[in-house]
Image 1 (cartoon, one colour):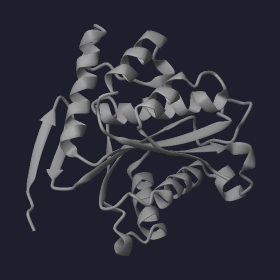
Image 2 (image 1 turned 135 degrees about the horizontal axis):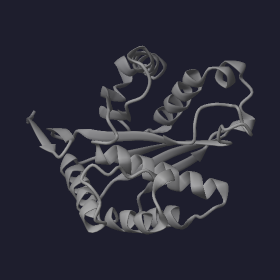
Image 3 (image 1 turned 180 degrees about the horizontal axis):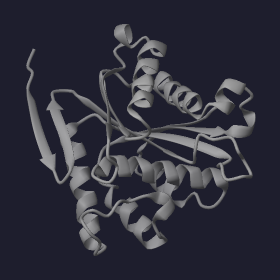
Image 4 (image 1 turned 135 degrees about the vertical axis):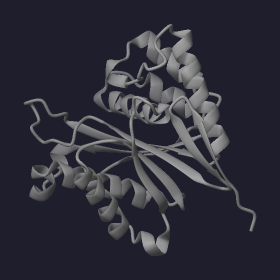
Length: 227
């Protein structure tokens, strides 16, 4: 079996290239809290950006970096949907159109969640929703998962253990590697943030423009309303 490994670094994005490796970048929109009406979002979205080709991931990353230059912002500028104005959003979503990646997302209307364990423990809720989207993703196999770095190491380790157990990862091999990365330095986590934000916007009724653009370019594999 032909196998090779090469590590490339492109201004903060490090990708391990391996034949047939799947790269999955995961981020959310909204927050996992349940103080709705007192600061917490009413909808929570997890989005996964799936690259079946590491070279395509590198090209998309480079395009996002070039978009910063086009917008005359710092090379350290971070694209975040909630903090990005309309002109920047328009430019960003146009820039990523040529690249091949798949989007899977789950949307959760928090009012339908009755479990006290999920409502009172934010990490339990977050971990459970991430597990659900990976469980539903039948095409996700032997993936390298990348999350935005969050919380203390103990919480990150808890997510890793929880997913391994709940997904029976030892036998089903849904993921081979799980790491937390700095979103300020990782452009493809920023892509996941922008996509999650676009989906959350469509759920709130503000605008479906960006979601429709992603659909037209055949990037949406599934947007699943949790029930």
